Length: 361
Image (tube, rainbow, N blue to C red; front, side, top):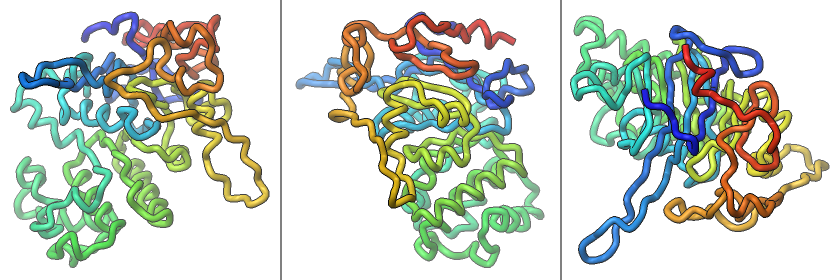
């Protein structure tokens, strides 16, 4: 595994202890991401020459423990989905390492990758476009199970029926088509398709953002029940902090391709450190008509990832910007509290965490 460079952002993440930080052993750590970068070339002119790159994911690192959930939050366009897809090798990385169960996902041959595919799954954001309209539900859920020969043929029908029941569907619905189901039911089908392959790790890419609030709660509870019963590990991608608070053990806040703050759920909600995190939290709606929110304004829109600002990427919108922020990027990671990390010049003088050393097993 390559060592992250000095400019890369390296965050040690674990939900194996109360404060969210814990030195893992090989049995605890399911996924290690080190200095992951995913750049997309920008082409221009008649000859379509590369004139720059969109830095969708710009050097992120973390560990995910078995049976735990990492909540990845941030505005649309910050690189959350690209990070999830790059981890699964659905979108090619530019640099970095993705270590799953001790194996570098990008060093695997096509046949080796095919063998571990059932163990790494994804639940897509849109339950309407992610299901084939031409296939009945039973085929959608069981197609990959047959392809990977996960259960004997004589047990296949009973197995698919049980998966449907576990996801809140009924076996008699297996011959129906996706258009005959509601949005919440379609997302249950997507979840059933993922867990039918008996995975250890699932990327949940905003799985409730297209659903009504009441249905969101049902789907979140389903995911938590499945995690408990099957020992699943999740990366839960969302822009909704209230949803992330409910399901996550550890939360990472992403801005323009980088993780700007990481900590246990309790620490992040009790004491958000980075100005971007503070602004996001101030915008959370409170169901109290008498409550007067002290909102922190964020000026403008997120800058182009193909032409990010100099210095700190957030300085053009930060309400606490200083002169140094405009010219010099902050050091990789400050540990402001035990297990609570951020990248921000406001915390100069705190310990700079050395997670590459800490994470050696």
